[in-house]
Length: 167
Image 1 (cartoon, rainbow, N blue to C red):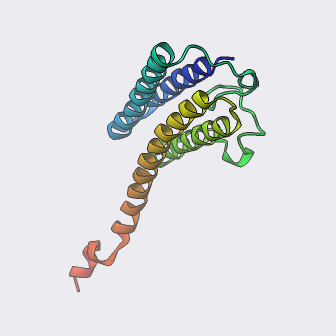
Image 2: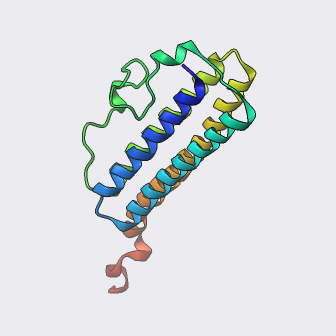
């Protein structure tokens, strides 16, 4: 399988994954983040197309035919630990963000493995770039999760407790 075809399909599947989630959520701010992630996947797709048409011809890698991308429906249980599978997303924002974080972390791990296993320097470069792009998503989503978690901490803090002023 050509690495470009693999990467293009993964980005398409990632875009669809985030757009599908965005349609299902109730919170507008969460919808905007998911739509932004989908747009990033679309941008990655265009970058890969540009690299495919201008920089390199075709870089075949027969090992890619046996590796599913992280957004495909058929999960490779050896690659994705069972404990990390999310069977059902709840309406809560943090659950959706955690699911997205898992997908992005899986993407980083997959691109890292493909980069390490690749024998061709051009393929290594492409996988490294894709890994770096997905690492940016991991960082953004981790920051959002941290902010959501801190909201609970702030509300419980003494300086935000209205009962404190009553004494």
